[in-house]
Length: 199
Image (tube, rainbow, N blue to C red; front, side):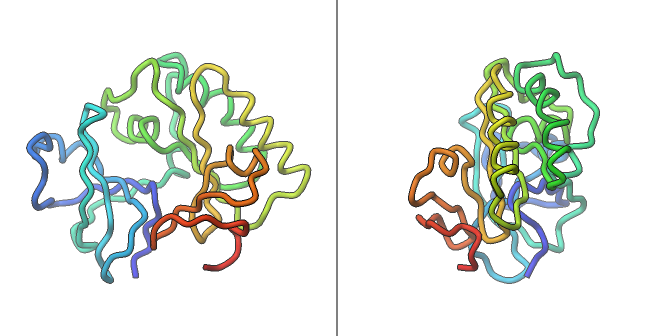
């Protein structure tokens, strides 16, 4: 078993069978993103991302090849220029609201990647992707705090993922009151009404 979680960013010393767009120079700068999938022990499911939206590649790596790991929670504390694009402006708005919840959280997706690397992967229409670690269902006051966070983002699309420890789901689905939501797990996606219960 490995201790890495979905959305962690990993720098490695070697990648085999990389796609043509993933040059060694790019891979030295650009980390791999841990994804959810079942793998053999000590192998990590990851995704490569390039400079274009079309440049994505799923693969696995050996845990022994990992040089460095940066988690979304670590990126929540990284200083940045909030005026660089709409997604970063939105992050500056919601960061204090997220901090006030007391839950662990951090930016993922393009924003997390940009904060971790300094690479120019963000566009004016980039989404703001966030992960929030909720080990138990939120109570009424916590649910209201989450609604406030979701409505505070007006300059770009917000994708707030809730990590229950058993998988991840979109907060928007839960907030909409659906009887079942799509939970992304290491064994694949599944519909469930109880995302906080062990699978």
